[in-house]
Length: 181
Image 1 (spheres, helix red, strand yellow):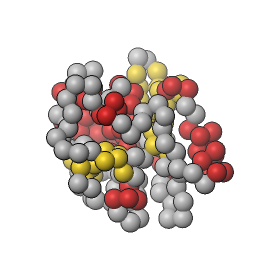
Image 2: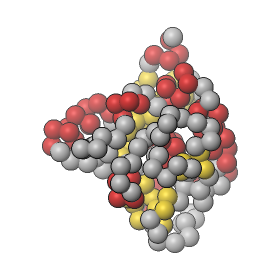
Image 3: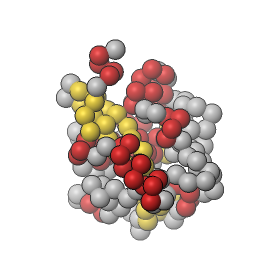
């Protein structure tokens, strides 16, 4: 299992350490390395409308990372021209061993009804190695609706958070536009 065993932490952010600190303090994680700011969204072309960053529990009651597991039918493209990412997510969802590598500790990361620190991590294969990317759960919305990739099931957030982690890895959401990586 060598290819699946090792990974490096993107921007030296360690998921378990940050999560432990947030839980100890009873605070939600807000990522200083990918802040809820225009710079995380775009570098040249702003989205149409006023963007408000919201946590899933601010969008609806009882958000879930998964609703009835992971399915290729979950993923819906938003306003970003990244159909290639939607196709990759749909393919990923069909291979259990792979999505469990990309979304590690998926049961531990699930939303808790009492308190969730708003931190997630995802792994991506990049330049011959696995890179572990930490994100908060602040997601860009317009009029209370997610504006980029989202699940067909309104209360499910795995694909929106996965896209956020991939955007962070590449510098912004706009960097994912049209497969310009």
